[in-house]
Image (cartoon, rainbow, N blue to C red):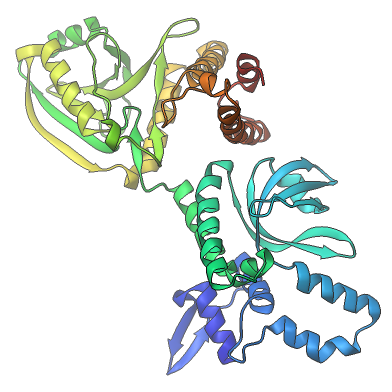
Length: 439
């Protein structure tokens, strides 16, 4: 029982054990997928205080009593039950899937029907492929990642393996998987957690994203302020707010055009990892689109500028002083962490989209605009430099660049399939990319 308690706390975490009256109480939930993963890890990977593994003890004690077929089954399980880092190469619903081990390059033709109905090509799966009667299938546990996570999890796995090989030069890859399964699992869960709630958020200019707000008092006639905002090409009226903090106020958006200018982040401080928050606005089908920099709320005696970085707020305040001059007086600024309010940001962006295109009147136009924006985003991507200053068009001209490009395309293909499966528009046009790059 001591071995089980130690292993349970090691795998599930200290919060899974309560102390009561000097005794340890294990918090067991057999329906929790993590418990299934723990059982497999405990049986096949965990080293008991005796120096043995549960599966090895079982083979010694029960193995001689098994039939030939049962012995073969046990041998296959002992040889193949490893938590492995896999990339989904193809999926055939109702038939199976093809996986590739990212550390060895081995191709595994899987016959897992359940995975074939929900798996997506190019997804990364840390799971236990198991050979049973000549057919591969998955056991009941695993961590699913996206192609966007591949670089990070592969870096962790490669570094772990390199260290393992130094200590165990005679050991093979499957030995590494068995001895470091818990480390890989923890790393995958951390990557998964950061993907859903990234530690770093940035604006399209590359600055750290925060909630930034400037408050002004109106000095003159509110109607004069309204008129000046209406005449400014950088400011676009959206609607009159109903409900919420700015109920009854006029809502405008601030765009990157005309006199608007926000400096780009210095090269040495540009984001290398994290989530970039960016929204574009257009007046309608066939019209140009512009980056949205912030929101303005004009109330009877107040004006509030809200945006997502200190740099944007500084530039926005300077622009408002140009447009409104002595009609406003700056009161104060407010700043807070944007990560704590990501759901609010998502809601605000969704509300803005609904405000721009009222469904009952403009649904056909909104659909045309969505198609146009996707195509524009795709064509911009083709000429947008990566961290090394190379655009996808340029990358396609060299063998090395083409290889990197094909790797990056996996993420786009994955996102397209996920979008189509959920009934949404794909984020980019793969047909345009393939045609433009000759892929």
